[in-house]
Image 1 (cartoon, rainbow, N blue to C red):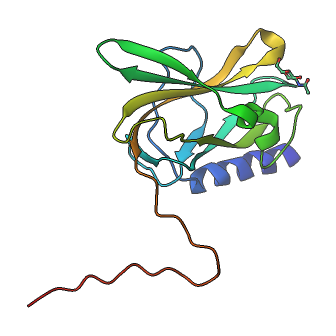
Image 2 (image 1 turned 135 degrees about the horizontal axis):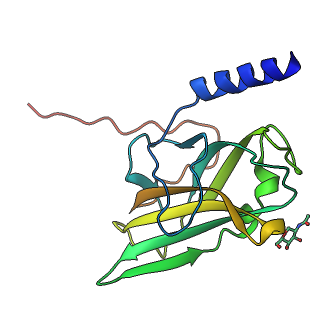
Length: 178
Ligand SMILES: *[C@@H]1O[C@H](CO)[C@@H](O)[C@H](O)[C@H]1NC(C)=O
């Protein structure tokens, strides 16, 4: 009975979740998760502003009991040839610290909600088109991939800074001359 309720809730969560149309990875093995949502982006290429985090909410089912995972990202850029650049996620690579409904170890069959964040550095030039593969790997199984998503992105300029203080910044009204 309890299991039924858990499954039902998981289905509800998935039904309510927004979705981004991500692809299966090419450079890495590994299945797609149940759902992936890049905040603010339904249809790739996702427009990612410099100097802030892109937030990706992922729902996946644990294929077995897993104690320790790492999140990895690799960007593929097309210059004259295709270049794969591993992207250092820093603290954000510690997968277990970013589960929102559970904690490590995760149990076989458990439906896990995970919030992946990646800071977009300014050294990515504005306009850069790239494909990023995000994956989590099992550290106790020689970095076997648990799931992987492939996402076309485009880097955009930083959003205007939010000023200190509490007053809201309203956009300047556009005056139309007659
Ligand atoms: C998890 O694995 C990473 C990489 O192998 C290691 O550096 C880290 O200490 C491990 N964490 C735990 C809690 O075992």
